[in-house]
Length: 354
Ligand code: AMP
Image: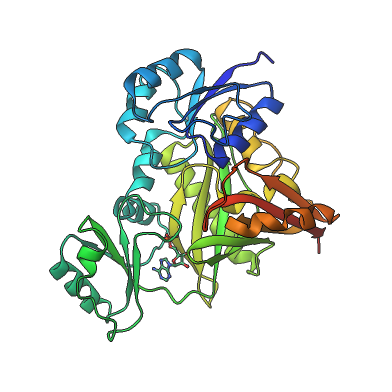
């Protein structure tokens, strides 16, 4: 195979792990990222140091690459659409557009025949009060754009929770109020679609969040086969509706009757899929590189049971202990400075498949 070049917009740990997987298949990688010394640049062939929407930098990236991808969903859609006129951009800009705005995303997911929480667009304090009244005083208020790891959210648990000033507290920006879902557990599914339309999904993972940040992903999830099958079917519907190429991560709430409510989708490799590098023959990162590189998708079968745990902030101090364990696969992101809430690495503990 002739080595070709993949452009990756974004230089964080996801870009780093994509670049590592790309190198193993003889692809070169170029990272577009304004921050120097970023995790992805340590392992890529080259970094263009510029803003994600810098027209000259994007033109330079397009000229030097055969295909372009991105590692986070807040890349400006206009920048990606302009690029897509000259060079394949995967996942397609349509997917980015659907994932960037929670309101557009929920409508899109519903159009695919997949249930979500009920929702109201909220553009003022009075709209918030009306929406809360409709949901009996309960709900989760979120910014429509640029929210991540639970940031930009407020939970109303009962009618006793005051909504006073909540619209302003979230920045007086476009918001969405979702109905509160009394879920039993949270799962996600990582799936991929190739340029020829074939699709493959990894087993669903069961996710636990702490302080709004993913803490652990456990596979297999404690769900019925029918629930796992429903997650796969939902992923297939979303992928084919978007004419998708690459890996997608879709998060769901599981209700006590086993039914699924989709929460959100990420048009990229996903933190809750990091376990695949240790417990599957082909990781989500390689799967994405294969998909966007025009190669056949790999085998997504899981050979082990596992628990992936994020190393956040000072968790990084536990690495010497993790390294002594024979059952742990340690992956560090090359970040020199640890801060509370910052993802520094992750560990996947493997056990024999039950
Ligand atoms: P998100 O940023 O949408 O992933 O939300 C962060 C976390 O908040 C989720 O993982 C859930 O634990 C919780 N959450 C979000 N939306 C809802 C909802 N509509 N009902 C109940 N819990 C929610």
